[in-house]
Picture 1 (cartoon, helix red, strand yellow):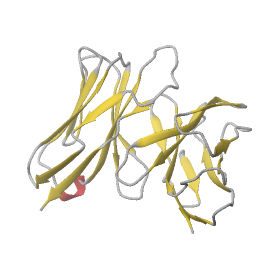
Picture 2 (cartoon, rainbow over the protein chains, first blue to last red):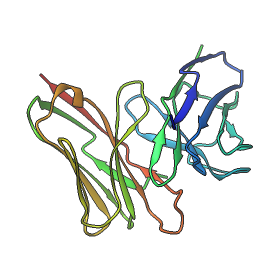
Picture 3 (cartoon, rainbow over the protein chains, first blue to last red):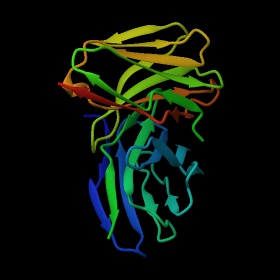
Length: 109
Length: 113
């Protein structure tokens, strides 16, 4: 089945560690996005990529990094520079309409 | 940043009541999308609108693309407990950039049995 898959669903990170969240899609979409959602809040754009080997910062890119080496994959790394990383992270791909993954809940312990 | 204003921020209604929420922008949008997010899950697309004035239904849900192209409305009729969740509007502001998508802050809906 076509879709977009995020993993893991839950992730725990110690302070000072980098962690990478996976996002894979088999929808053949060029554009992929990462959003952050805090409790009771809307979606804030972290990074987006419109084509392989290209990506742009969103509204809250500080402390995050991404890569887009393959069309199907858009991993997000939450670095130690991100001071408040605990949140729900959503990946989406876009081909006319945006389709979302199931999300990854990251908790700093 | 986000260019969409979504209202209301939250709604508390009785089961069976109708619901209406809207999204407005300061610029013209060429596509409007409405999503629902259940707790702990990713948003799921409910309705997509592509033309000004378009009115589209999906079961008890009806959405409209405003004539001015700067707003959209979502109505839910005869609400039921499983309608609970966060509803997001999204829009595509540019014909020349198909990958530019903006989201509203969401409307949190609570339905009391």
